Each structure stands twice: as C-alpha cells, then as structure tokens.
Image 1 (cartoon, protein in one colour):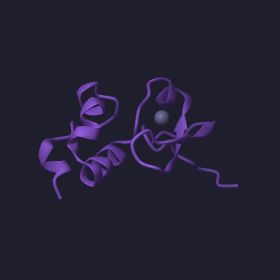
Image 2 (cartoon, protein in one colour):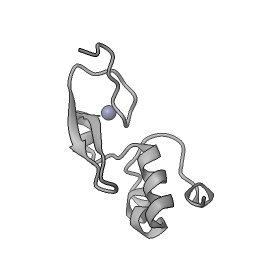
Image 3 (cartoon, helix red, strand yellow):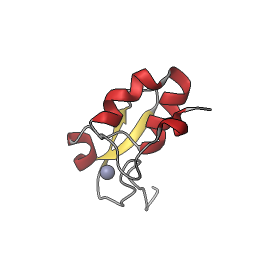
Image 4 (cartoon, protein in one colour):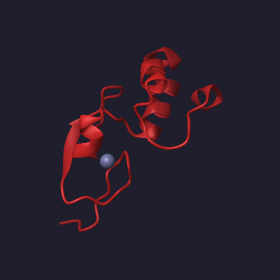
Length: 79
Ligand SMILES: [Zn+2]
C-alpha cells in the first residue's frame, strides 16, 4: 500500500482515488471524486496531449477550463 497517493489533477491527498482513463491521451489517471465529476484532466495531461496531438484536441478543455492551476498558454502547447 502506498499511503500518500495524490490526485493527479488537484494534487490533494484523498481517502479515495479512482482510476480513470484520460479523455485526451491513452493513460490511466488517479483522480478524486471531485475532479472526476468536474471532468477535470490534470494540467500536465492537457499540455502533453496538446503537444502530441495538436492544440485542436485540447481546445475544448482549455476553453471550458477543465483543469486546475495556472492558465495554459498557447506557447506551452508548442514544443
Ligand atoms: Zn482531485
């Protein structure tokens, strides 16, 4: 057992985290209920997906602000 598992999205330690497949890239994420119900993707996943597959894919997530943290700028999506 790992005793301190943090939610990939909000980085908070929660009693229960769920494995959820990212809607952007094919990886499994550990997310808390709050982030799952808000349809949040971790910020780094949004950036990674944008760099890998283009800004078009992540545009919606960015416009609807379905991530936590500092705003993702266009330059961050460029490699
Ligand atoms: Zn969370």
